[in-house]
Image (cartoon, rainbow, N blue to C red):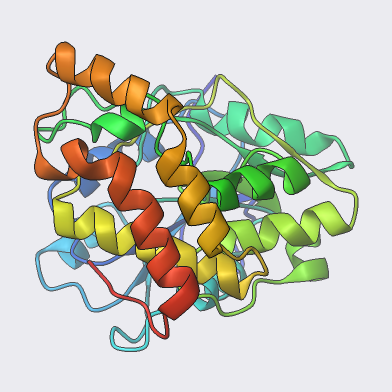
Amino acid sequence: MAVSIAGSEPGTMVEVTVGIPTRDAGPLLERVLRAVFGQRTEKRFEVVALDSGSTDGTLETLDRHGVRVVPIPRDSFDWGATRERLFEEARGDIVVNLSQDAVPAHDAWLDRLVEPLGDPEVGASSGSSIPDPERPERQFQWERNGYYYFTREIQRFVARYGKGLSFANAAVPRRVWERFHIAPQATGEDFQFQMKLHGAGLRIAFPEDAPVYHHHHYTLRQVYKRCRNEGLALREMGCRYTELDLLIDLAGPRKYVQWLREAVRGGLRSPGEWLYPVLRPVAVYAGSRFGAEYAWY
């Protein structure tokens, strides 16, 4: 199967658009683009970057690979508005959302990711994220062990809407986007879109053979801000985190058992990892109860 890549010239037939929001992406972006352009597929695709004021060489990297760049304002960045603009700029019948630090894990990633969209009852396809063996920063331990989202607001969301969609590695048919669109949402825009799909009776496919290398490493301050932002975002989407939720999550023993296991085997190496079982409930509650604006990190 030969590699087939659509040019960036207007009027070129495009089946798939791979859209990457960028902002000071650093050297990892080179790996991302090499993996994308190295896909073995018969689909004609383009790559579009929505860049919010990069100054670190990101634009030069995009230019070397022939990526079409759409500049967007840096100061008024909003994830929901950015995703909406991505779909507006895309020429493909399928739009793939890919994070600037998510490296396709093999050369059949694109075909495997979009394959489930042949089913008209599937509104989106979301591939997995696996630890990146080449990244110098180790994965945040509570992300690695599967306990990152242990709090009750997420449990309620999953019980109602199903496993979470992630726009770090996801494909959506243009016809589905045209039906629902993506409203402005500072963060959590993928959850917002998932709620719309659920309301229309469309399901999300989670192919296991379309992974990307993608993981996070947080300082104490960064993980607090992220959890606080998540509490605020879910409150805006109708999933509040109450005082009762906070007390139940703080008292629940399961995460402390995991904490003890991690401590014994040396898995907790940073203040954020040591404090996470208490930090997350407190931060989510702060965002849900008192949050008025997002704290970027």
